[in-house]
Image (cartoon, protein in one colour):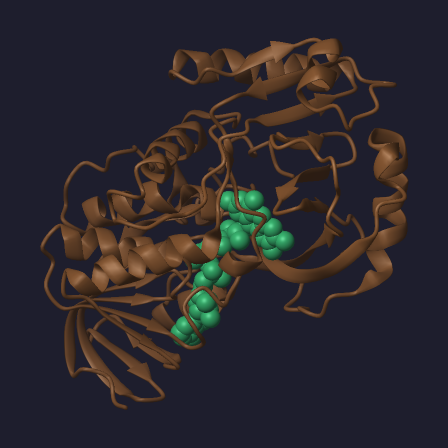
Length: 378
Ligand SMILES: Cc1cc2nc3c(=O)[nH]c(=O)nc-3n(C[C@H](O)[C@H](O)[C@H](O)COP(=O)(O)OP(=O)(O)OC[C@H]3O[C@@H](n4cnc5c(N)ncnc54)[C@H](O)[C@@H]3O)c2cc1C
């Protein structure tokens, strides 16, 4: 197989972000959209994600990208036309320090101003919503009933199928090895493409592609692990996406059991992708504090994936001439994929983007103008 000799737009990366971009470009009538993925579609971080979708963030841009995407996920059966198993079970952040409570109160106020129906709730209500939790040490919680989770593979499949229906070409098993912005070419292991524009949607691997294009993209890979429990007879049908903010331990229902995850402060950056049980003692300790009834539940398989982390935990979205980029989502790229696809479409078409992402340009690090870090990272 060789690649086409020319394209209006080459999208590099076939995860949720790249697939959404290809779909939104092709749907808008952009001809000759070519997406290149070196592995299978979704094989990067996207299919390792916990599937959480939410608008509970601490700044305008992340809230708007999350909220717009939630609407798109809710409508996914019609556009692009794919069942994604969306469960709007809500996101529940459990808070145990006065500082966290104050910070979430500010954030909820901003979310409400932007139309999100989140609210602060007391500990008793948190327990009613998520009965598996132990409330000792909790002061309050932030609750957003419209958030939830859905299936990343289905989202990629839906965008990919619809993008192809609109005439885009999505190729797997093609590795990009060079980008010449002056010549307008993309070199791959299957040939060279003349490209009107190039979009980097290469997730944790984006820094290397930025280097090829001469546009610094400060994205660092960081391993994150999740694990699934055995089926839990009697488990409530609705389990909110529950996060113990202090420890970062989280869980939500996945089929007949739970999916559980947690960050690892000792994890060194790098492309380490092997699943390793060494995090289980820390996870066990957090479960013992916040959801002790889960301690004796049997564990099934787990897996590891990569967060694509930037210095301020906010995405890099922007345009440098004929090179566009959408990467560095630092753990929330799946949930922002629908809106980011629209934004890149708009930037490519020189329209005002549906969400003003001006502050997310990668130049903020060159200029040293990075803003407040996103604080709702789990
Ligand atoms: C354990 C875990 C849980 C997570 N949970 C959530 C969650 O609940 N909600 C959420 O929103 N996010 C979550 N995330 C983060 C989320 O997975 C990512 O932010 C998101 O998948 C990024 O999507 P992407 O399309 O940018 O990257 P990817 O899905 O990684 O896609 C990038 C693609 O680019 C390809 N590529 C790279 N280099 C090249 C090249 N040279 N040539 C061709 N192709 C190339 C790769 O093969 C890859 O498939 C989680 C991540 C992990 C690891």
